[in-house]
Length: 339
Image (cartoon, rainbow, N blue to C red; front, top):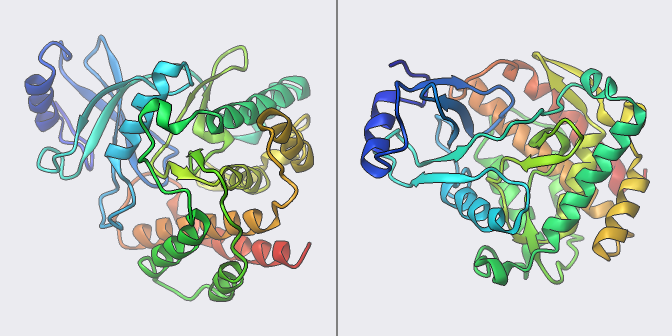
C-alpha cells in the first residue's frame, strides 16, 4: 500500500475500516489528480470501487479557507435535489487521520475541459451549447432556496460584498512574498464602491468551465471544487466565470489562449444575457463585480505562488502561476476605468 504527499493510505484504510466497514474490499491505491490549484484532490480505488478524496494543501492557510466540512455539507444538500454534484460518502473532520480534515465522495465519469484545443474539437455548435448549459447550471444553483435544503445558516448575505473585499485583502496579506504593483490601489478602489448584496443565494465561489465534469452528450454531470461556497451575491459567481473565460488557461505547465477565443463560445454579453433570462436577475451593473473577480483571482494565484515558493504544494505547472497575477490587476483597474 503506497501513499502520496498528504495522503497516507494505510491510515486512510484504518479510518475507513472503522467508520465504513463494508466500503473498502481491496488494497487501496491513489493518484494525485492534476488541475487543482488549492485543495489537494486524489483518485482512490480498491480495484473495484472508485472515489475521490479532498483535503487542504500541505501548508498553513487561513482558518476560513479550504473548509472540508463546508464542501461536504453543500454537496450533501444539493445532491438530493438532482443538482449535478458528486455523491458524498464520508467526512472526517479529525486532522489526526491525515494531518488535516478530508472527505470522500463518489467518482463521477466525465471530461474536464481545460485545454481550449480540446474544447475546439467539439465544434462551434457543441461549444456554444456546453457554455450555455454551464450558465444555466449556475442560474439553477442560484435558484435553490437555502433554507429548504438546510443551508439557511451557510452564510450571511447581508454585507457579503464588503466582507469579501476585506477577506481577500486578508488573504493577500497572509500570502505576501513579493511586491505586486497596483494591487493595494485596486483594493482601495473596490472598497470605496462596494454594491449592496440584496437577497443572497448559494454561491459556488469558483464557478468556471474547468470546474465541471461534462458527459458525452455535453451535459453537465458534476460541479466540483466547492471550497469557497457560501450564501452571498449571485453576481459574484457570474462575474468570476466571465473573468475565467477571458483568461489564458494553464495547460501542461504553460498558458493557452482563453476559452472565449474558441469558435462557438458565446461572448460575455451573450453569457450575461442568458443568465439574466434564466435567473430573472438584472446583470446591467457587472463592472464592479468583474473588477473584484479579477482581484480575487489575482489573490488566489498569488497564494498559490506563495505556497509554491515555500514548497507547500505539489503537482505540475505551479512555476508559472505567479506571472499571471500582474495582468489580472491591470485588467481590474481597466474595468473600473470603463475599458
